[in-house]
Length: 610
Ligand code: M6R
Picture 1: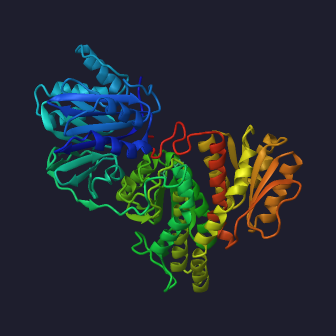
Picture 2 (picture 1 turned 90 degrees about the horizontal axis):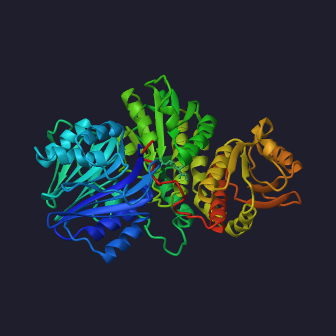
Picture 3 (picture 1 turned 45 degrees about the horizontal axis):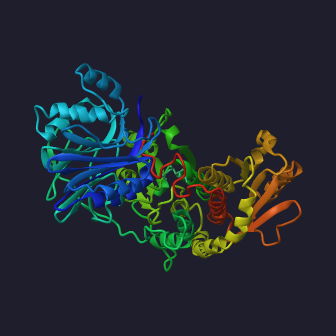
């Protein structure tokens, strides 16, 4: 049975025992997967493997009872979409000679398995990874470790990031990358291998990244890199950015709530990075295509990041003379597209590691078009592979549900849109300056939106026994309706439909029945009256209305069960504000339903396989 995995890997070569640091790094990598975990260290030339199903906490308990010595080791957290997440399938996969951790998919594992079984080799697990273990073990009979790994890689199809230790070569870890991300970190008398820089952050801020096809050999004192011809290569060492947000929950019950409450600050940080308030100007330079020459903008992302692209489409259409298309990365990468070198392709991704978004970016690169990425993790694959990077400066986002990154993406997209509109003279100087000034009101307005929490908490109760729910909006409130529905689904496992309010009559109205919770997003923009008419259609069919608006007058009447008022700044800025009660709503419904808020079932923070 073929297994697909998305996971995190770590390796440490040191002059002191490594198991505790491996556990600590695995906890950071749990955002990539959390259905089983394991580690292997070398103790007196023995491979000492410990594995468990479930979270890294379980692995830590096992280590507490039976500690693992060893100054060199590898670790893994796994997320499976196929194949049982049990102890046997957990990584590492070891033979009597080597131990391997793997992130990715070996597409020809079935064929290799058959060949190896003909040689009477036995498999313990259902995973595709174990073929790597057995191939290296076989190759080691006639080769040194690096050659044995290199020869094994020639036989593999698919994607991988690997960490490998060897029973008889007790001072090295070999890493290899094809497709899946892999970083190394440098420290005094200790070196590291990791799926991302975040996992290594508490140990070092000196990082290099393996490019596709490359291998590395780590000892405690040295790291050597090799290209796909096994020729030695040098790597650039990056100093990682300082992370201003702390990575513990502080007084908050969940990371998600902490991250929702951080938004006034993260949005302010983002504005400070891009806006020169004194000169009333936007500090965005070095466009990969002159703004005047951009023919079309194509915005690409997945999930919440896709929703920010959708909001930006409304802004670009409103404020600039440029045509805009948006696409879901998993669709974009397989479509037959006509590329144009005057188009700007913008990739939006919090993690910068989403496999579909990264693959869509690769396609653009192969077609020689200009790319821009809007990311939170600036050391990520997508950031490194794009021509131009605009970071969102939101600080580490731990909760699987994206909150502060969404507002950061919106902010960068809005600022970019204003800058392009001004360079092209699509808007005049006074509109440009007025819009820049308006941005400064957003952090305080978000803070006021957070004050709606107690009201939203009451609203959340209305969803507890509901069969489903519906989120409706028009214009840029339509993507916010989609985002509100996505947050509710992902956190509370409750069915939620996000729809353009004007589409109701074309089918979804049939879903409305007595007591169905329907969230209406109705800011005072050009769609306001139309949205209210759609609301009446829902009321007439018994839907329970929960209205989110920025109009000043009292919104509650006998037909509206709850009303939440957010501040008004400007018509185009309402997405920054109406989002907040929806984030809080999803949080509180999930809390009432006792769901695992920071780690919702079946999901992972960074989706590094297709
Ligand atoms: O890291 P990315 O922004 O590329 O991730 C894209 C989606 O996987 C992500 O936004 C997902 O939809 C969130 N869990 C939603 O809250």
